[in-house]
Length: 376
Ligand code: GMT
Image (cartoon, rainbow, N blue to C red; front, side, top):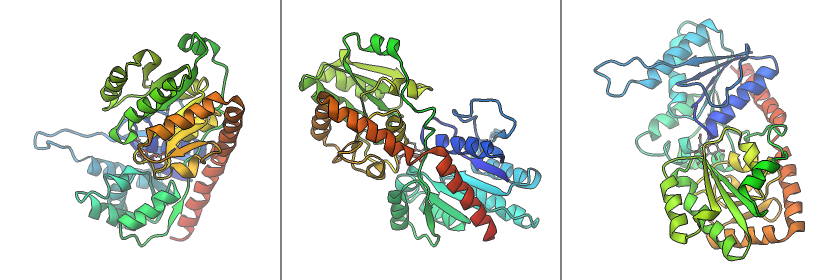
């Protein structure tokens, strides 16, 4: 099939899932076209079966805000017509599903129909999409899609709750490359970070408010107070980094915390981790938790959104109430102090990650494409 995939290019979340899906589909012999305003971070290798199309925004003195959704729709029309797309799959509803609707209206008049599939990822529903500024157009665009998927049961239910949706939403979870995300020996790195063989706790995110990075610092402080020699590695960057740094200063424990900034090879950091922390205030799936679990790292998470669908309480780690840093610190201490329990949870985490193995999930998308195409 000729498949068009539309996504945001940024680190983390929907852009990663879209790009990895494109690679998985290309590996099965499909022709992939990726549309975005910049090359996605994970589209790193040179391949002939994946073509990247940059949506360019011509500036004009009248436009304070150049209309990206129009430029995108125009590019979609081009691809539908000339690359003869069989499927147009957009990731993140805003504005991608709306541009797809527009593009399809244009090409349908030329009698070349293409099914549009929208994958809902999270904030396009829970935060931004349900905001009155966008709600009506998001609802309309989802309903106009030929197929709709969500990354967790939680997100599916939330979408039905927040919008008037007349479509069946299919849950297709996020996935993981078990070969890339596996534990490897990184002894030099471990020695450099932990000269006295301290335990390693890792957090990875884009440091937005929703990630609650100061909760990570507070929960980690509990671990130190419980006499576990440990280091905290904060991976990523974003608006709340300064707050997190300030929290370390306030708690006088900065020497135990390292801010590593954005890292491309997260699996290398996860390879020396003993625990992963994700105390988010909203998380429809928690791909970062799955990446950690795949590297055999038990997870301490909050109980919001889709996180409990990924991280199983008392099996692959702990699920604590939102903002309950005492619970997170207590549970982390228990796991770090008990080698047998840690080993059991690390094994269970990897086993749980296997449920989301990339090939299995790519097959589900492939079948879904065929089903939607057949129904047109
Ligand atoms: O979490 C982010 O900051 C990025 C965001 C996105 O849409 O790009 O991630 C969302 O989609 C991911 C992939 O499906 C999910 O794993 C994340 O849980 C979800 N983030 C939130 O719901 C906050």
